[in-house]
Length: 84
Image (cartoon, rainbow, N blue to C red; front, side, top):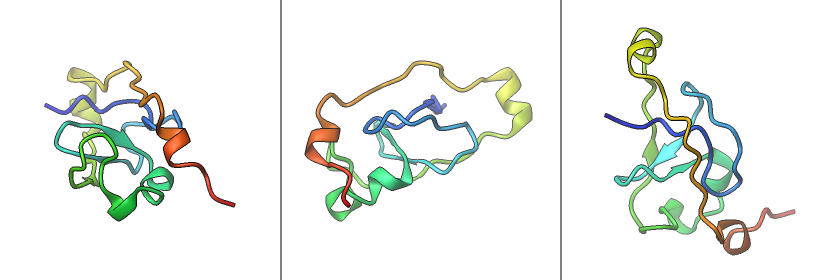
């Protein structure tokens, strides 16, 4: 079962369980804005393919809630700065 992590690992922005987010096979989690800055839209942690994270239906969230554990990639903001 997916953790449904609550934040983007790069910018630390909040990601609601039903928000658009992207994950790799290790469930590294990213917001659309950060994914747009990654070369070839690949996971900066493992190089894996990023896919849109599925949403968990509300009824299922009641019995299997999203994670509250925040994960950050220490140097992501330095490696992939916001442009403009």
